[in-house]
Length: 142
Image 1 (cartoon, rainbow, N blue to C red):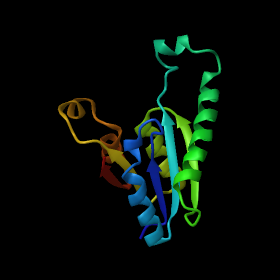
Image 2: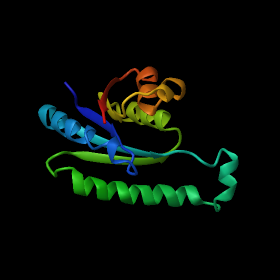
Image 3: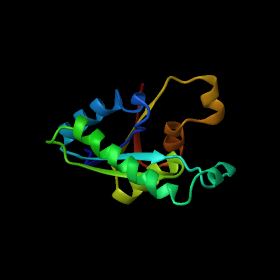
C-alpha cells in the first residue's frame, strides 16, 4: 500500500517523534516501504530577527541539523529499514509538503500535541500539512 513514507521530526522536541516514529517504523516494515525523515529549521532571515545573526548562519545551521539528524537516525532507526533524510530551512509545513512531492511520498506522518484553543487560531504544522497537501497524512497524537 505504501512504498515511501515521510516522517517529519523536530529534533528539539521528543514529542514530535516519540510516538510517531514507532508507528512509522511498524508501517515501513509491514509494507516494505522506504522511510524518509525530514527536519526543518524555521526561517529567521526574512524578518528583522535575521539581522542579529552572522552572515552565512543558514548554511551552518543546516549543516549542524543534518549531522544531528544523521545521529538521530543511527540511534533510532533499525538497519533493516531503508532510510533517507533531509534537513532544510523554511516554513515547516511548506518544506514537508514540497519534500513529499519531490520524493513522491505515499504517506506523510507527523506528530501533533493535543489541541488547544491557540491551535485553532494559529494552526500547528500538522494541520497546515493536512489542509494543503494532496497526499495522505497520518497525525499521531503526542
